[in-house]
Length: 388
Image 1 (cartoon, rainbow, N blue to C red):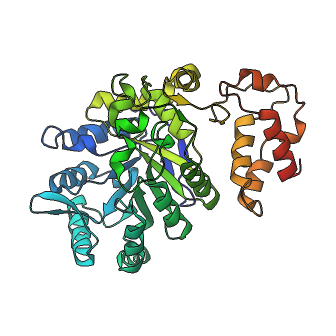
Image 2 (cartoon, rainbow, N blue to C red; image 1 turned 90 degrees about the horizontal axis):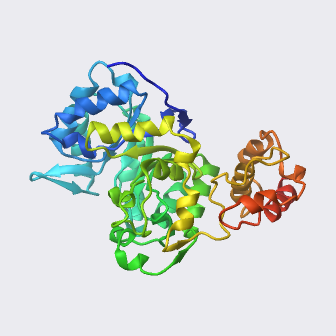
Image 3 (cartoon, rainbow, N blue to C red; image 1 turned 45 degrees about the vertical axis):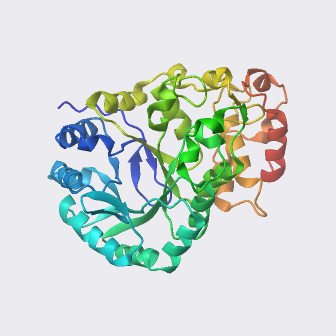
């Protein structure tokens, strides 16, 4: 297969790993009796996709992935899940340490590898569950695996921003797998993942991002925890106007661009069920800015109102002073709720070519903003916080 690599790569938090911003979910690996696996890996390699997630415990899928990686293990960064095991012919999430240990050993044998790049503690959506992970040996086991080199970095997957935040603030989690898309971002924390796509929760007009989710993304950015994105397309619902909770469809490019615009996000995991679906996701790398633009779509959503909230869409550009308003606003949001501005945020702000203090307050950016953000006020706040 011809190599046509136009991929962009991002730092995965503070792990030191450079990951393709488009990755693979594992949903399609089981297609055609797992014969699809090698095809998808071939496409991934050809297009520079170096990251994939393997949440499933199906031994046939794990074996197929192990076979597909033979001779090219070092070309892929593997995110695979502990606590996801296979019992009595079906998937099970477990917190029993003996089952976790047995499942890990079986997984490594099937994958034919002696290490995972990211060992993901699987599916934690309740605060009580996180406490069990912390106190009942699961986290300690993950740390043992890291100390021995069998996993390089510890991750956790969650759909609940409060639980995810608690795990991130513990300092133990280096990578967070989280569901990110413009509809889920409006929903408050819940221990029932079904609430994220329940039609009743989108019956009225929703306004702006859930504050717990916003705080989670910003905290991950501040602490150097990389986010790997699941459900960027809402299981495909966001791509279909009849199924979309927003009442209108988005494109693949718009969904990916939205996720990659959130703080701390490093890679979007595309759950492709066919070569065409993976190629559609990879095509994001060649998409025009117009094709990626989600702001115009958001403005047309009948059930969502983003008024007054910066979406980092960059419609405010170009600034006559060449200020990158989206980045200044992102760093402002990272700093604004801290007693002291984190040094990493201050350094990143300093590295910008132009700063908020250069703002002329001409207001052209506000005329362009689709969401009515008070950009001039934000530039003044940033100047106060950063000093220039």
